[in-house]
Length: 610
Image (cartoon, rainbow, N blue to C red; front, side, top):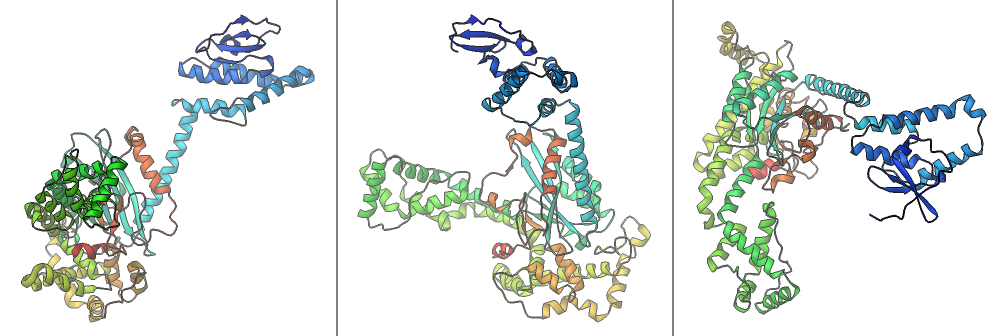
């Protein structure tokens, strides 16, 4: 800090402002300064500068030191009131005009972090920073009222829905390793637009178990009163949550039998499966990948080495236009691109090994073969194939039926796609597998047909005419009700599904919208369209495309993780509820928490089956 040759200024004018209790006016040469007695900061002390800049500094300075600023604010209000009184106005003179000019000059020449048009706004800002202030409480109350109204809108939109909803259960973590669970409702509205709404963002106890998770989800279902509208739930891990899923299904079935006996209820995230399989491969070739990474880094370390490497490439006849790239280890697709580019320069790396003593991470011939096998899978992957197959079989056993039915409900493919791929997957066992899918499809269709004839309070929901399992006497006649329906329905109703399957497939084109197709054809297939609307809304992934090639999951930023659980949930849910989506989500469109759906126009499902 600069040392002043301080000379106490002559008090030619009485310093009446209370701020001068916290400043000392000193003179240096021909200039006057005001030095803060708290932080020793030097500001202009000229009589023409006024005191606004001193007061602004003092408020900030004293706020940091927890000093009481009420006296300053009180004096400021008194001065403002006095300047507006008739008595004061009758005695206005040149000095008052100079003060106002100095005040304006000070506001222009002394920039502040926040600028306000009125003095009162400055006071309100100071009060807002105080979490216990009335101003903050009023704003918080208005915010909570607004969120309650938005929550009510979401509640009404879900309960006015004629179809069912599917719930995505998404796990989050924070940099401090805290865990959260996000519950998102997915459904297709009356206009056949894909919609998704975050219902809850729940903070989990560090020692949570599957029991705690199931209780948290059941509480959310109860609070939103959607247990009787639930079609399926999508979880991220294929091998976890078994106890939790069992408890939830058992609780739901106490009030209403699940469609297809719950076979379609438990869906697992396909992106998570893909990531876990890739991680098995990456772990198996970790040492090889490390050597390739260090080899590329060595070549790109200096211009001289890069130039020499290019000469080696020319000598061995490599004319590829592809350049060597380093990967980002947290993005496995970038590792694949690094391996792919390095393999093309294998001969140049081998030549470099002979002429560059500083190249210490050279790969052996076997390691180059392993690197090639990752880019072009071969026998090397047999060492991890068993682990990969176990994971895939676990996923397929849970999701193959719902995947197949969803594919059948695409008018471009219908049963033909299942017949084509199942022959490749199952070989001679394909006919039996195809019959199982066909039987499951018809059983589900019959349940929707029975539900459509019900006139109870939930008549819009498929299966609502089925008796509750809690009613023992009626439950014994559940089989009879089904028999009565199947033997008494007219041929026109029972052939809704047959009519759809018998008609030719719809031509495939680039701009096809499956949701729009079902919207147009709802009058032709009234029951099947209800089934299609529920199935096509199922998210096949809880992770969005931006995480499909990442080794990490969903991580909550430090700002949100530092908030209290209630505030954090209010902010995240409120952000989702308040975003403008007048036209709904288009097929497969992404929003705050992007998912993949059976309704995705990119044929994600078909690619996965293949």
